[in-house]
Length: 489
Ligand SMILES: [Zn+2]
Image (cartoon, rainbow, N blue to C red; front, side):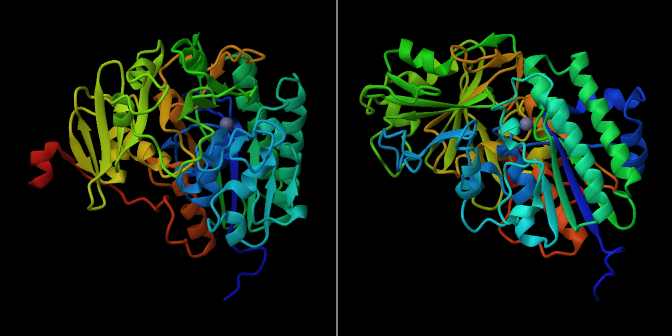
């Protein structure tokens, strides 16, 4: 039976871009977020939540909007190179080179793997505010165009974000009065100001408080009334940057001519570096020679890749501030740090096996096999939350690098062309970047991945959940088998 319009289930998803869960909690415990406390958290405290790798703006919206990880969406970062297509003709948009931080931002909509359905495809009567991804929405249903700001392209102008956030808040209240089935809104201010300050700066805290005001106006407009699910989530955390380590410059210093933004032309490059969120970088070897497969680390180590030093992987892993280098080796993902190496692989029975070879690189306490959900629970409080699942998903993208470099705490991965200098960043696998806010006016499972928000919303709206997605309606608990002996027991 059809619900009458006023009582039918509705859902609203707001992204508080770059909000750290500890800052969010501290502010609400201090009584600084009264509207959030009263309306959004009436049903309980925020969930323990993780985003995806790379933990970067725009890319990390996709799991919430499609239920699919970036690797499944074939969007491995905000910048990428497709070795199947790239022939060095960077000026041709179709030539397999992307940076969404600029005129290519809109291409995200067509770049997401065909066949992946968004909330906008699945829920009629949807509206979205300030989103760079709107596939499935009619033009008139995308409101408050500010996605260049979201990508950080024009975020340098002080004060710009505040006008934009106010416009989004006002429009969202108007949307609440119109009661569409689904509303999606991006509030980019926390991330914009964090980059130029640090996550705990008074200017950043003010943006959280202003967002609380927007929640108050949304509530006054009836946003929480009736059968309404309201979720506030961040797409990543953020951390202060103490050190810049430029991977492209390190490659040049190792004698490898390297292509990088913003000047994506280099005579006979032997590598390309594409940075995401500044905390991670995709490294492609021998770009400009189209090939249908990735170069594996053992090929590099045998010296089989012309012009690439055999010790390249270890050399990158040893760079100051680099946490680890990941690479696909057969069906496994090998992770290398300055301490040694380990691997992550599907076990063929739906589980994931983690094997430290010469070091416990991911800090997971030794070899173990478990379901993806069990790994989430086992790793969420560790140094690299959800790393086994996140490393495997990223390399599903054929546009992911031969090598993926993840920065350690306090480090970002570019230095020589960044204006203004970033004082805080995100993008890596570290806890400060991966842990994010997920809070809702209805009880949600905890811990939760941002990809689980997609089926939670569809379930609430009574819309069938597509089968082949990464997000799930999480079970109450999952168990982990420790060590090979335990796993077989
Ligand atoms: Zn962001």
